[in-house]
Amino acid sequence: MARMSDEPARWSQATIYPDMWVDPDDDPRDSEGASPDGELATLLDFLTGYRMTLRMKCEGLDAEQLARRSVPPSTMSLLGLVRHLAEVERDWRNWISDAEPLPKLYGERDADFNGVVAEQAEVDAAYSDLAREQAATDAALAGHPDLSERLGKDRTSVRELMVHRIEEYARHCGHADLLRECVDGRVGQ
Image 1 (cartoon, rainbow, N blue to C red):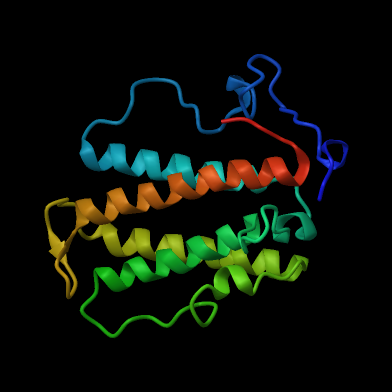
Image 2: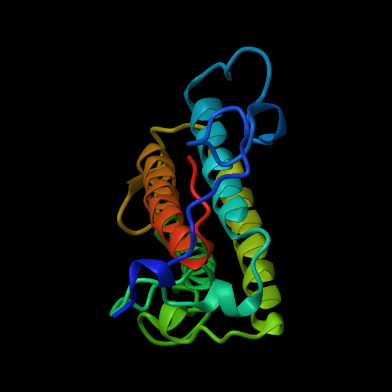
């Protein structure tokens, strides 16, 4: 069992607000000006922000730190989250397609978490997978700007899928907050 002295000290890179990840002027998620107009633009803005947050929570860590399972007995790790989100991006395309489902990226159920290896090549591959799958899902949905349109075998609305995407990233960004704090003590929104 870890003693209090064995745990990383809590810290933040922010100097203005100690509960923030970075200072507002350094936060790439902050944009000046009015928020987007319209429902679709708002949903895409939130999705972009959560995607960026996940990457920020992983920045500055090496392969071992990214692969570390910080909350035993969970198999969850920051690298596992990156792999999991690549997997679900791919699966969301299955939701909107009438074609045969795309195969899983990492194999059997939970292999996205269970198959994590602390090697830089695996980290690079996971980020590449995530970028590719995000772009493919974004492209597939770009042809369906009507949020009420129903797609795929289950007739899922574009709105439902967009909200689910935001929910999935937001939930896992919460996990990433805790995982990162366990790895090196860094905290913040």
